[in-house]
Image (cartoon, rainbow, N blue to C red):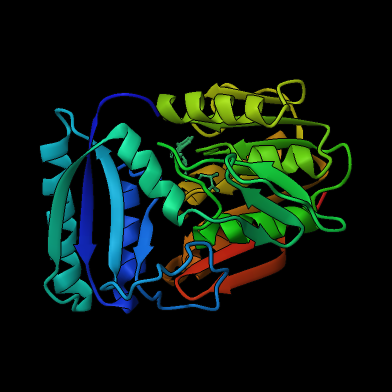
Length: 305
Ligand code: SAH
C-alpha cells in the first residue's frame, strides 16, 4: 500500500460480538481487521497478539478516504442496526480517525503476527522466520483483499486443503481473495493452481502475493465468476465463499472435476449447513470430513465417480 489517506474505523464492542462486527467490516471490503483487547475465543490461533496495554475490546479496520467512504459507513451502520434487531447486539460506538497510508502500515505491523494452521505458517514479509520441521511458510501481508490467515473460514480451508491435497494435483481456488489458499496449495505440492476472483482488486493483490512467494510458474490468477467459461478439469477445488454461492456452484462442479476429484467448501454459516450438505449429496458428492468452529462450517467432499 502506498500513498494516500485512509480512515481508521474502530468499533467498540464486547468480545463476544467482535466476530460479527469483523464480518460486517469484511463485507464492506476491509482487507483485514484487527481485534482489539481480549478476543472471545483466545484459544483459537492467537493471530493478533493481545496488545500490551489493556485496551477496550472492539474491532478496527482501514478504508481508503475516497468517495465510497460515506456509503461504506452508512452500510456499516445499517448492518449493525440489523444485528441489533436480529441478535440483540448492544448499541456500539464507531470511532473514525484519518491516517496516512504509512501510519496504516505501521498500525498493521504492530498487530499482525505469524499464524500457524497445521503445517502452514502464514508469516508477514517483514519478519524473519525459521520454519520448523515439515512446516511450509507462506509470506503474506495484510492488504486490500480478504485472506490473511486469521479468519476462521480461511483457517478451516487451510486445514482441509492439507488433508485433501495430493502431490501434483490441479487445483482451482474460487474466490481467491489475497491468493492465500492458492499459494498454500502450491507450497504444499500442487502441480498447477488457478485462482479466480470476481473482484479485480483481489486479482491484482493475489497476483502480487503469488509473485512474492515465487510461484508465478505454477499459480495463475484470473478474474472470473465461479466456474463461468472454464473448460479444464481439476483434481481439487477450494471455495471459501458463502452458503448461497455454494448452492449456485454445486450443480456445475462435477463437470469440472476429474474422476476422484475433491472439493473444499468453506464459509458456510452454521445455520445453512444441512442445506449445503443436501445439495452436495444431490449432486453426487460424499462428505468425507466436516469441521466447524462456532459460527462456521467447512466440508471436504469427494465425487462418487
Ligand atoms: N480464499 C480467500 C478469500 C475468501 S473471501 C480465503 O480463504 O481467505 C471470498 C472471495 O470470493 C472474495 O475475494 C470475493 O471477491 C470472492 N467472490 C465472491 N463472489 C465470487 C464469485 N461469484 N466468483 C468468484 N469470486 C467471488
